[in-house]
Length: 247
Ligand SMILES: Nc1nc2c(ncn2[C@@H]2O[C@H](COP(=O)(O)OP(=O)(O)OP(=O)(O)O)[C@@H](O)[C@H]2O)c(=O)[nH]1
Ligand SMILES: [Mg+2]
Image (cartoon, rainbow, N blue to C red; front, side, top):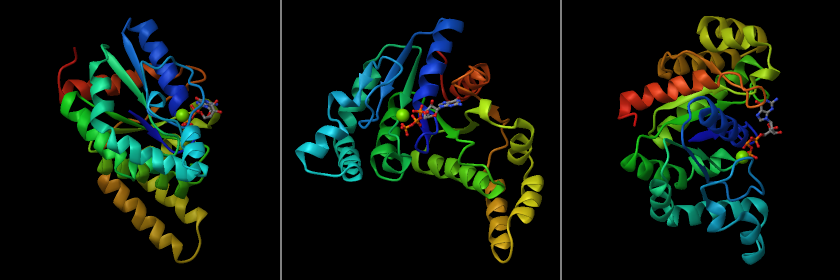
């Protein structure tokens, strides 16, 4: 499952990773679109939530604004969890790539996401890839918040969750690498960035993230250049091997 803040690149990464797996690994891939708000997808969905309802339809039928319709869509998703997960389970593929709604709070922080994740886990090994968008994590504190959202996602969905740095073609790599891998360096940079009492809060925030983060290597990917797809495959494959069978 690909999770991330709005515009973090979930849809493009699902498409790029799927194409890479089909080409390099000769894997059979099933694409699942769980975003009822999107108009087009760069992949051809094998299951599409839009076959059940779309945000546009809900706006018209129930006279709702875009956010109200997204929330209504999340309620409908929750009501149809068993149906949705049965359809995903029936897809025959080596890997199923699940693209999730644009705004992660609709999926992760409401009941639909946790219920879908629980039902998926009961049927198959399920792994979450959490996309950190470098455009949202430009400051050291912003980066700390981005990492903590990945931890919150793991807590909500209950699946093994891997934070990855997306859109790596846009970033000056060394700095962000070091900030993400070296918590002391992150603390130093936060002290430089912030002033006053907020420094103390930010430092304690980083302490908590450090305790809660599992020490994994940082995977950096770009849907645009194809960089890092092999490393993404490695972490997904390793977690599948740990959690269950790789068949
Ligand atoms: N430079 C660069 N841009 C990217 C990359 N991946 C996605 N984008 C751009 O980021 C924007 C959002 O990409 P999407 O894949 O639609 O992101 P999303 O998370 O599915 O977005 P929503 O579902 O609308 O929230 C688009 O303009 C993409 O072209 C990448 O690896 N590099
Ligand atoms: Mg999307």
